[in-house]
Amino acid sequence: MILARWTAPQRRNGGGDKLEIDPDGSYRLERFTGITRVGYFAGALSDAELQELNDAIEAAKAEPVDRAAAPMADGGEAVVTGAGYYMPTRGATTQSAQHAVLVLLRRLAMDLTRNPIAAVDVELLPAEQQLLVRHVGSEPLHLERATLSLAPGTGEPHSVEASPDGRIPSDDTAPQADWSTHIALGPEAVGDFQVYADFLLVGSGATRPAQVTINSYAE
Image 1 (cartoon, rainbow, N blue to C red):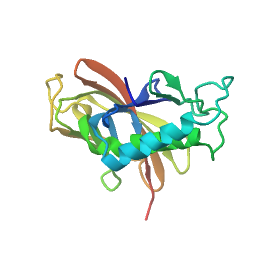
Image 2: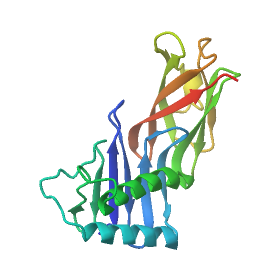
Image 3: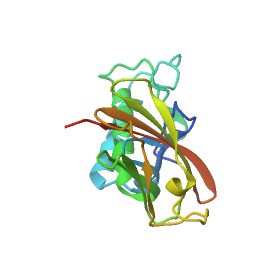
Protein backbone atom coordinates (compact mmCIF):
# COMPACT_ATOMS: atom_id res chain seq x y z
CA MET A 1 0.00 0.00 0.00
CA ILE A 2 1.29 3.45 -0.87
CA LEU A 3 1.28 6.45 1.44
CA ALA A 4 0.48 8.87 -1.38
CA ARG A 5 0.34 9.09 -5.17
CA TRP A 6 0.31 12.36 -7.13
CA THR A 7 -0.26 12.46 -10.88
CA ALA A 8 -0.48 15.36 -13.31
CA PRO A 9 -1.17 15.37 -17.06
CA GLN A 10 1.15 16.78 -19.67
CA ARG A 11 -0.75 18.96 -22.09
CA ARG A 12 1.62 19.32 -25.05
CA ASN A 13 2.54 15.73 -25.81
CA GLY A 14 0.18 13.51 -23.85
CA GLY A 15 2.65 12.26 -21.26
CA GLY A 16 2.41 12.84 -17.55
CA ASP A 17 4.16 13.09 -14.19
CA LYS A 18 3.71 10.61 -11.33
CA LEU A 19 5.04 10.53 -7.78
CA GLU A 20 4.51 7.52 -5.51
CA ILE A 21 5.61 7.53 -1.86
CA ASP A 22 5.67 4.42 0.32
CA PRO A 23 4.92 4.45 4.08
CA ASP A 24 8.66 4.17 4.85
CA GLY A 25 9.39 7.32 2.81
CA SER A 26 10.92 5.65 -0.25
CA TYR A 27 9.62 7.17 -3.49
CA ARG A 28 9.50 6.76 -7.24
CA LEU A 29 9.11 9.80 -9.44
CA GLU A 30 8.44 10.04 -13.15
CA ARG A 31 8.70 13.70 -14.11
CA PHE A 32 8.35 14.51 -17.79
CA THR A 33 7.46 18.19 -17.68
CA GLY A 34 10.12 20.57 -16.38
CA ILE A 35 12.50 23.44 -16.89
CA THR A 36 15.89 21.71 -16.53
CA ARG A 37 15.66 17.99 -15.61
CA VAL A 38 13.20 15.30 -16.70
CA GLY A 39 13.13 11.50 -16.48
CA TYR A 40 12.97 8.76 -13.83
CA PHE A 41 13.96 9.34 -10.19
CA ALA A 42 13.98 7.37 -6.94
CA GLY A 43 15.12 7.81 -3.37
CA ALA A 44 13.79 8.38 0.13
CA LEU A 45 12.25 11.31 1.98
CA SER A 46 14.03 12.63 5.03
CA ASP A 47 12.44 11.95 8.40
CA ALA A 48 11.23 15.57 8.51
CA GLU A 49 9.71 15.38 5.01
CA LEU A 50 7.96 12.10 5.80
CA GLN A 51 6.56 13.44 9.07
CA GLU A 52 5.32 16.60 7.34
CA LEU A 53 3.51 14.54 4.71
CA ASN A 54 1.98 12.15 7.26
CA ASP A 55 0.73 15.05 9.35
CA ALA A 56 -0.76 16.78 6.31
CA ILE A 57 -2.55 13.61 5.16
CA GLU A 58 -4.01 12.91 8.62
CA ALA A 59 -5.25 16.51 8.87
CA ALA A 60 -6.85 16.23 5.41
CA LYS A 61 -8.61 12.97 6.26
CA ALA A 62 -10.09 14.61 9.34
CA GLU A 63 -11.80 17.29 7.24
CA PRO A 64 -15.36 16.87 5.97
CA VAL A 65 -15.36 15.37 2.48
CA ASP A 66 -17.63 16.55 -0.32
CA ARG A 67 -18.27 13.28 -2.15
CA ALA A 68 -19.72 15.22 -5.08
CA ALA A 69 -16.32 16.79 -5.73
CA ALA A 70 -14.27 15.08 -8.40
CA PRO A 71 -10.87 13.75 -7.22
CA MET A 72 -9.08 16.12 -9.59
CA ALA A 73 -7.57 19.56 -9.18
CA ASP A 74 -8.15 22.35 -11.67
CA GLY A 75 -4.89 21.47 -13.42
CA GLY A 76 -6.01 17.89 -13.94
CA GLU A 77 -3.98 16.57 -11.00
CA ALA A 78 -5.09 13.61 -8.90
CA VAL A 79 -4.06 12.67 -5.37
CA VAL A 80 -4.55 9.22 -3.82
CA THR A 81 -3.54 8.45 -0.25
CA GLY A 82 -3.64 5.24 1.76
CA ALA A 83 -5.87 2.40 0.60
CA GLY A 84 -7.40 4.06 -2.44
CA TYR A 85 -8.56 7.22 -0.65
CA TYR A 86 -9.00 9.92 -3.31
CA MET A 87 -8.22 13.39 -2.01
CA PRO A 88 -11.06 15.69 -3.18
CA THR A 89 -8.79 18.46 -4.45
CA ARG A 90 -11.29 20.14 -6.76
CA GLY A 91 -13.28 22.80 -4.98
CA ALA A 92 -11.10 22.68 -1.87
CA THR A 93 -10.23 26.13 -0.55
CA THR A 94 -6.60 27.18 -0.41
CA GLN A 95 -6.88 27.20 3.39
CA SER A 96 -8.01 23.56 3.62
CA ALA A 97 -5.82 20.67 4.77
CA GLN A 98 -6.72 18.81 1.57
CA HIS A 99 -5.28 21.62 -0.52
CA ALA A 100 -2.17 21.64 1.71
CA VAL A 101 -1.51 18.00 0.77
CA LEU A 102 -1.73 18.87 -2.92
CA VAL A 103 0.68 21.79 -2.53
CA LEU A 104 3.12 19.62 -0.55
CA LEU A 105 3.13 16.86 -3.17
CA ARG A 106 3.62 19.41 -5.97
CA ARG A 107 6.65 20.77 -4.12
CA LEU A 108 8.10 17.33 -3.53
CA ALA A 109 7.68 16.40 -7.19
CA MET A 110 9.81 19.42 -8.13
CA ASP A 111 12.44 18.97 -5.40
CA LEU A 112 12.97 15.22 -5.69
CA THR A 113 14.60 15.45 -9.10
CA ARG A 114 17.90 15.62 -7.19
CA ASN A 115 18.05 11.79 -7.29
CA PRO A 116 18.02 10.75 -10.96
CA ILE A 117 17.88 7.13 -12.06
CA ALA A 118 17.58 7.72 -15.82
CA ALA A 119 17.11 11.36 -16.76
CA VAL A 120 18.41 14.22 -18.87
CA ASP A 121 19.59 17.68 -17.86
CA VAL A 122 18.84 20.43 -20.34
CA GLU A 123 20.83 23.67 -20.46
CA LEU A 124 20.33 26.63 -22.76
CA LEU A 125 23.52 28.12 -24.23
CA PRO A 126 22.34 31.45 -25.71
CA ALA A 127 25.77 32.62 -26.89
CA GLU A 128 26.29 29.40 -28.86
CA GLN A 129 22.60 29.28 -29.95
CA GLN A 130 22.48 25.70 -28.74
CA LEU A 131 20.68 23.43 -26.31
CA LEU A 132 22.94 21.12 -24.27
CA VAL A 133 21.28 17.80 -23.35
CA ARG A 134 23.15 15.61 -20.86
CA HIS A 135 22.35 12.17 -19.44
CA VAL A 136 22.27 11.87 -15.64
CA GLY A 137 21.63 8.84 -13.44
CA SER A 138 22.77 5.23 -13.16
CA GLU A 139 20.58 3.68 -15.87
CA PRO A 140 21.16 4.17 -19.62
CA LEU A 141 18.86 6.27 -21.74
CA HIS A 142 18.53 7.05 -25.43
CA LEU A 143 17.34 10.32 -26.93
CA GLU A 144 15.22 9.07 -29.81
CA ARG A 145 13.86 12.39 -31.04
CA ALA A 146 14.06 16.09 -30.25
CA THR A 147 11.75 18.73 -31.67
CA LEU A 148 12.36 22.37 -30.72
CA SER A 149 9.90 25.23 -30.96
CA LEU A 150 11.21 28.77 -30.51
CA ALA A 151 9.04 31.70 -29.51
CA PRO A 152 11.12 34.86 -30.09
CA GLY A 153 10.18 38.17 -28.53
CA THR A 154 8.81 39.21 -31.92
CA GLY A 155 7.36 36.98 -34.61
CA GLU A 156 5.50 33.67 -34.59
CA PRO A 157 6.84 30.48 -32.96
CA HIS A 158 8.52 28.07 -35.35
CA SER A 159 9.85 24.53 -35.14
CA VAL A 160 13.36 23.19 -35.69
CA GLU A 161 13.75 19.43 -36.12
CA ALA A 162 17.05 18.23 -34.69
CA SER A 163 19.22 16.32 -37.15
CA PRO A 164 20.30 12.73 -36.31
CA ASP A 165 23.87 13.84 -35.63
CA GLY A 166 22.57 16.48 -33.25
CA ARG A 167 20.20 14.35 -31.24
CA ILE A 168 21.78 10.87 -30.92
CA PRO A 169 24.83 10.46 -28.67
CA SER A 170 26.41 7.87 -30.99
CA ASP A 171 25.66 5.72 -34.01
CA ASP A 172 24.33 3.03 -31.67
CA THR A 173 20.65 3.63 -30.92
CA ALA A 174 20.71 1.43 -27.79
CA PRO A 175 20.32 3.30 -24.48
CA GLN A 176 23.61 4.54 -23.05
CA ALA A 177 24.88 6.37 -19.97
CA ASP A 178 27.09 9.41 -19.40
CA TRP A 179 26.50 11.09 -22.75
CA SER A 180 25.85 14.66 -23.82
CA THR A 181 24.84 16.26 -27.08
CA HIS A 182 24.37 19.77 -28.46
CA ILE A 183 21.32 20.70 -30.52
CA ALA A 184 21.45 23.82 -32.69
CA LEU A 185 18.64 26.32 -32.16
CA GLY A 186 19.16 28.32 -35.34
CA PRO A 187 19.90 31.99 -36.03
CA GLU A 188 16.54 33.12 -34.65
CA ALA A 189 17.68 32.30 -31.09
CA VAL A 190 18.72 35.84 -30.15
CA GLY A 191 17.51 38.35 -27.59
CA ASP A 192 14.52 37.34 -25.47
CA PHE A 193 13.04 34.01 -26.52
CA GLN A 194 11.53 30.81 -25.18
CA VAL A 195 12.43 27.24 -26.16
CA TYR A 196 9.94 24.36 -26.02
CA ALA A 197 11.86 21.10 -26.34
CA ASP A 198 9.83 17.94 -26.97
CA PHE A 199 11.92 14.80 -26.43
CA LEU A 200 11.28 11.09 -26.89
CA LEU A 201 13.30 9.17 -24.27
CA VAL A 202 13.94 5.43 -24.49
CA GLY A 203 15.22 3.45 -21.51
CA SER A 204 14.56 0.30 -19.45
CA GLY A 205 12.21 -1.01 -22.10
CA ALA A 206 9.97 2.06 -21.93
CA THR A 207 9.52 4.99 -24.32
CA ARG A 208 8.27 8.24 -22.84
CA PRO A 209 7.66 11.75 -24.20
CA ALA A 210 9.15 14.61 -22.22
CA GLN A 211 8.96 18.39 -22.43
CA VAL A 212 11.28 21.14 -21.22
CA THR A 213 10.56 24.86 -21.37
CA ILE A 214 13.44 27.35 -20.99
CA ASN A 215 13.49 31.15 -21.20
CA SER A 216 16.40 33.25 -22.41
CA TYR A 217 16.67 36.95 -21.59
CA ALA A 218 19.04 39.30 -23.37
CA GLU A 219 21.45 41.15 -21.11
